[in-house]
Image 1: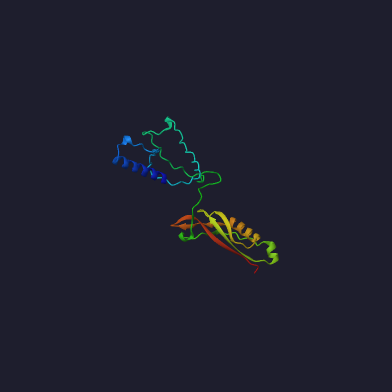
Image 2: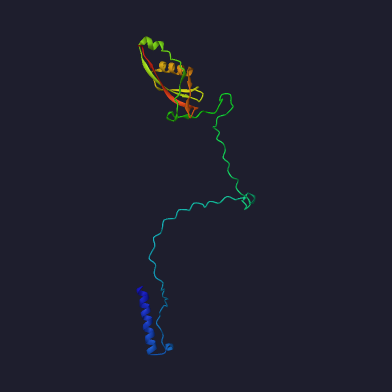
Length: 196
């Protein structure tokens, strides 16, 4: 930088002297190297950046065959709902009717009741051992009063539970009513096995 300034100053002095004293042809300039000044700003040194990660390849869209492309006249077909496959068969040999709708007891105008009650047999082994128990069963019946299922809610032991299940399966019920129509229902039946 200093050299460039010195050269510029020397060149300027020579021009001044040459204008004032003698014509340019008579002056023999000293051995001066013509240096052109670069007026562009000097860029500060840059640090070398770490190599860039290669970019992932750009996905290529799938090619669509011309005959597979939609046209303006082509309209999508409306979706039609398919019936659920879990509907029970109406006339199958095992299912005489569709699964009954079980109504909650608070909706019933008349509660279900026994039309023929079968009493459970006290298990002989428990009687000999002097064991007493209380069993609460939940019975589900259809609108004809037929027992569909029996579930033990409070167990008195395996033998007592089996005796209650057998008795309820052999019993018959009058269905509960809503507005005079028989409906399926689910209700509890307690049994007390006592030696007294």
